[in-house]
Length: 114
Length: 109
Image (cartoon, rainbow over all chains, first blue to last red; front, top):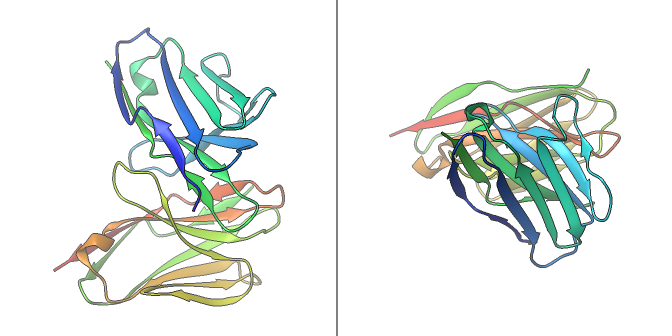
């Protein structure tokens, strides 16, 4: 199956700093990448849909100036959490949804803001 | 609005069978997915149903009834490693995945 590589898997940062999370599709061209956030004991929450070469589409309630998404190539999408605060601590996951039978997920990034 | 319901938590015994139900109300339907998620890890794909009926894959089976907006995931011969959360997701008319909150399955010896 397709492989989506997400990096880093864990990051701890100080409040007020920015963190970049990378998501790479290793064996296919990802025209569309999805970014999710998951708080403990809760389901996946779609944050935004990123399309290669165009601006991301954000879900209602997600601050686009805080969560910067770049999808400059068919194999790489990045999520940057700017001016991170403790409430941004969460599990962030990228995903590539195929037209067929499954969505492929990155390994996820556990962000802790102290 | 769109809604997916599944039980919050279930407990079963090693070696037994458990059925996790999922009911959905979505704008259109383009398939239903079941994912397994261990704590701290990303979800992994289990099954996909787009037509009514039962899909069997080893110890796991998934059933769909589109007219009832209902699916279940059946796990047989439960093993301790099956302790995880099981997520039901429906792809709507816009091909967006709508996720349930997940069912935490606890397996006891």
